[in-house]
Amino acid sequence: MDISNIRAQFPILTKKIYGHDLVYFDNAATTQKPQQVIDELVKYYTEENSNIHRGVHFLSQYATEKYEKCRTKVASFINAPQPETVIFTRGTTESINLVAESFGQAFINEGDEVLISALEHHSNIVPWQMICERKHAVLKVIPIDKNGDINIEMLPELITSKTKIVAIAHVSNALGTVCPVKEIIKLAHEKNVPVLVDGAQAISHIKVDVTDLDCDFYCFSGHKMYAPMGIGVLYGKKSWLDAMPPYQGGGEMIQHVTFEKTTYNVLPFKFEAGTPNVGDAMGLFKAMEFMESVGYEDIAAHESRLLDYCAERFNDLGYVSIIGTSAHKAGAISFLLKGIHPYDTGILLDKFSVAVRTGHHCAEPVMQFYGIPGTVRASFAIYNTLEEIDYMIASLQKVYSMLSI
Ligand code: C6P
Image (cartoon, rainbow, N blue to C red; front, side, top):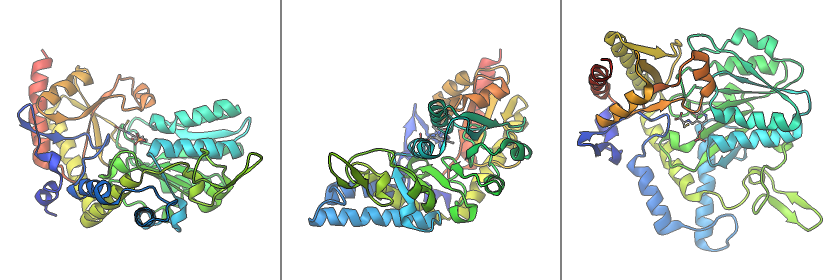
């Protein structure tokens, strides 16, 4: 794999910040965009822009066809059985809120239980808390161990006859732990409990096959997989999506409206009220093409080399503690310099033009578990290099010598 060829496709990577070459290690927050994605947005708004599904004119039909082609491509990208099981949303957060609200409205009642894990991002906690509060249901949590692995042995006792859904991250954004979602889904299904997988941090690193996983719902954001912000996906099994009520009301999601009664549209339109994000769907199409041009095998191999190398270099320094030491990690490494607040490390790294994320990473319960205010997180993408890690390590040595006096 030719990384310099891949890097050449990302114009922002030539940017200098404070006079240094940008080292972008904040890919878990959002990835950078390749030229073909950027070009597609310009092309769409220059030549193709139109509202879709409602015009008889050329542009409307053309844009409709391209938008639906994107849905079909997403379906094949994640091996969903039918395109109509792919719902476009604004991102993972909206996908999870859609399920919590709509599934919760139909299937969660007083005294029922929703099971999540202690690793979750706030987006996979708060929507469930909100529906549980409204329905007087109970939110239960699968604990994690010191390595940041989910305590899967506890699952059989945590899934009870009252459990209505399990919602779990595929990859933890705070620690990088890859969760054994296939095993969790199998265990939950043995008790007829559906499973939602938050794939926000998995989709750019791991080949996702929703049919093989047999998950009931899978959620991800385009912007974490080289696509624009503002477009995301909810995959759902057709039987669940058919049984769930609409999430939002408005244009497009209806069949007929009278003041007395409204009948709803078929899938996927039932869950896509209002004008959708057509331009960014086009960008998502190009992002999937980009990822396919590299291939998941090469992506995973390269990124795991980066992770292993980074962990080794941290260990060599002797004053770095890695937070989250699971044997199964993808994409991100969280760490602390001994005795130094993560914000201080992050702010100084920025001065060396190294972009990392600091803080609780919208996963406060994970930080509470470790009894720390937050971490510094370096998260990698396909265009990152070992040399960039060397540069971060050299920068960290300077940061440590400045702050450890
Ligand atoms: N995590 C991070 O820096 P949205 O914002 O809807 O695209 O994704 C939300 C989300 C849900 N689940 C997980 C596991 C996530 O990591 C994220 C987003 C970013 O870690 C921004 S907080």
